[in-house]
Image (cartoon, rainbow, N blue to C red; front, side, top):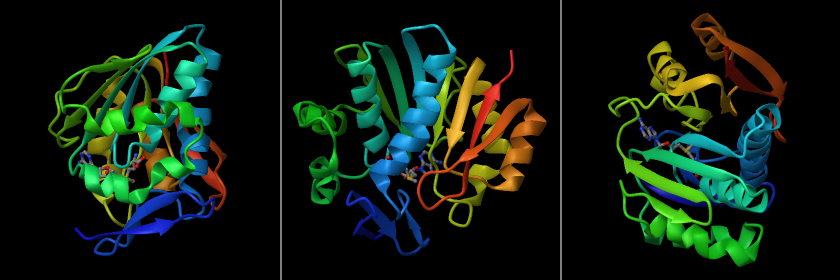
Length: 224
Ligand SMILES: C[S@@+](CC[C@H](N)C(=O)[O-])C[C@H]1O[C@@H](n2cnc3c(N)ncnc32)[C@H](O)[C@@H]1O
């Protein structure tokens, strides 16, 4: 599918796919959204509520690697050991990633080499920097073998209008299976049907204030 580079509201870049009329991130700010939804309301929240300095994160949809880079930064700066597994069905080429010029918007320039490294890393192989154990798998979320040990799940699928199957029970049940008790699922999505499905599965669901341009977002915690 043809992708077009766009500049989002906070100056950071993202990609737009015309065929599905969908962007990889919020038009109001890609970097702001990733930091707000996945790092602050997901990763940092789980660490605040669980007295641990090690965690396992799963990201649905590596895409540009923005969430992975920000997770690396956060866990390195907070001296946390992080095992990060991400799945991607349609990887971007290194050329596509470079043409985005994402690094110009990323914080902590002294860590920017990690952004390239995560894209250059071999698929299906563990790669480690500091205490960040990173693995990217080129596969479909629906066919991957479920590992049930995650603490935090970044659910960063395309929106409902573009990819409705990712927001139905079948996909959300897989998420439930993958999390440990007390594990947290987090997404920019605020759709009522998604919230009710998550509740039906046994998640404790919170409607949180969303990032700029979004009134609400969802966070779901697997109850012990
Ligand atoms: C909204 S974008 C994610 C953006 C990404 N997290 C980032 O920070 O750039 C959704 C991503 O999920 C991927 N994807 C969509 N369906 C998938 C599936 N069934 N399995 C794995 N990845 C999928 C897409 O190719 C795309 O990269």
